[in-house]
Length: 445
Image: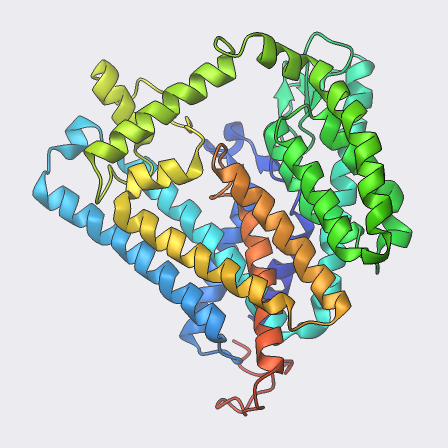
């Protein structure tokens, strides 16, 4: 089991940027993203580790995380039972049991992924640099794939194969715009996701430990963010500048002057790209703007009408279809309204939303506190992972990243780094299990 734990942790790091990679629907009858499959495998390993009390036990921060996760999952289960017992006809109205089960499975895969990364590092802290290098490798391969897809686009290559990347009109990982440059989605579902999934590897490449070797890939990655033509790429670039300003204090004046010189022409260039210019010209009739505004309005209406317990996990599509058209199957089964936080609030109510927000607030508060307790190298590492996670959280206000595994890889890493910083300032205490954190053979099952 211990070897399996390390294997799953390494896979989660290596697959970080390969969000789309999947077993297609025509193989098993359902789409299975590889990241999520690894997350489910991680769930099995986590449950086994907790069941057999594999040492070392979770630290204070991780115990709080596990407690919040258990409360949230138990709440979803109890809410489902009460909803069914209170109104058995709910299944004949809008409630879709497979979608509920699917959302629960996604929550479990995501939450388990964070703990797998955390526990792998806590038990085998010597592989920390290995996992970081796997994140860098994932970012580098993802950027190489994105430019490879761009080359294939200009060669006119098309395919309907959707294992590695999303084929937009037959173009792998590339969204045609009608302009000189298409939009890059790379190894993710769409350009907006691409604009954030590379952020964490990019920031790690810019640490003093790695910048000497990875700066060319970092530059190509920053250019790819702009080519994605996602509005959110602006946020990612600003977070990169913030990181450089924070880490390279000797060069702050140069960074500020460089940003002042480069940002205006870069902003003008981005504004002239087809996606941006079309949105600015047709703000009120842009398809994406209209659809998102409609979904936001629906979510707010659902929240106001179902404040405390929501409509049930995964039920947005069936509920809107039932209320608007009298048919819970009106919207596609895979329809997602974006606006992660509003969706969680609408589906799980004030109780579920409150648990999620409290968990994240506690975690991020501790991550920031840990910065002051670290040496320079560890601080740079934690800050890169933290700003990467903040970028993903900011995207959750308009996007759909909460149930994607890569965000929780950041959380697992951050929990380990923060806990180690806190424990370094506390008096040494012996683990009651008597097993050292890096013991190789203990509790092998």
